[in-house]
Figure 1 (tube, rainbow, N blue to C red):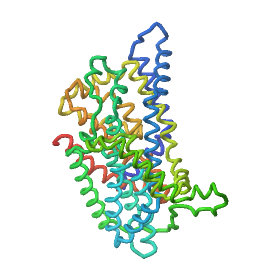
Figure 2: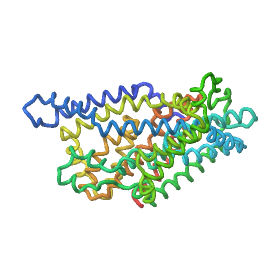
Figure 3: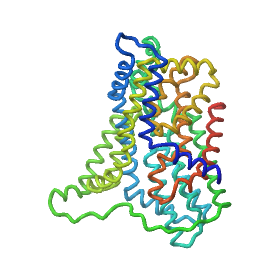
Figure 4: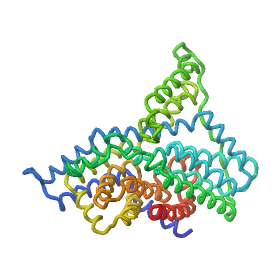
Length: 458
């Protein structure tokens, strides 16, 4: 398709690496702050801006947030590499009879898994797509492999409204709203903020569950139809291995690393502690990052069956976190500049002036979709854009949970256009961005209609 070729060429020719984009956004924010804000002290204004930036980078609460998001990704990837999940993938693969069957058998479970955990869904979808390709190749089943790869990426279109969504999880955490907004709002307005916005109002709200269900059905149907009408492609794939063979035991210490009983005992202790600590919150459907990560840690150790297997999977998964580790502090610095200099208030004034209570969520949706192209991280985007969206919502009397979901929907939608998070999938499937982009664009357009309709109608 000509349009997808234009988009892919634009990304390759004009967009540098995400880290370089973060640096450029930092410089741009500094420049805007110097030009359009006034100093509140006798110190040189630019030096004041630099102090805001430095303070934002090392904001303790946000650094904790960054580490939480790294664990979400790592533990999700680790779970995919476990034997139970590999058996699930193999059992799904054996159901493939045609390209249409393959597309829906990849898209549907990938979105379901990603709703639970985006890191799990990202790698699960990639490996499932790869294994479907291998199975089709071995059994002479003609499939459109780029379509299958695109179906394996659809989880990134539902993740932010799911259980591991950065914004819904953080606002459900006690004290996060106050910490995020204390340099943005007046003391009186901060006191009006709720301590938390429960996941029951965001992730588990009927409006979000219905929206997710519609997206699940429509995208699965689209994948099936595209599998029916598109041509098959050639396949030349080698077998993808889930895990490497374990080494021979050489010492008693190694025996402990490989002990199933030891791993089982530790995993059970974690889950017992999880049940004791978080059962009150679970009863109210309020999910926080620490709760999710603690549960996944226990499950990952149990599902791998030994500390050795668990640590081997962690070594494989840890490379995925490089972007979060090095880019998030820059996003935090941008937020520090915007909040410290008062830029957020000025931008919020503009949004309030052109919005109403009905249109504000729609503006938040579109702005989040655009910002995601330059800040390809839901967590980083929440740090930068979250205060602006929340302040605008408060001033227009828009329910805060609706504003959070509007940002989440916009952010996740343009992942179908932004190739950053597709890199692990492309590496596993051996596909190129230009091959999956025609299909992810179709999924994006369909999803956009559903999300906008939900914001207006539900």
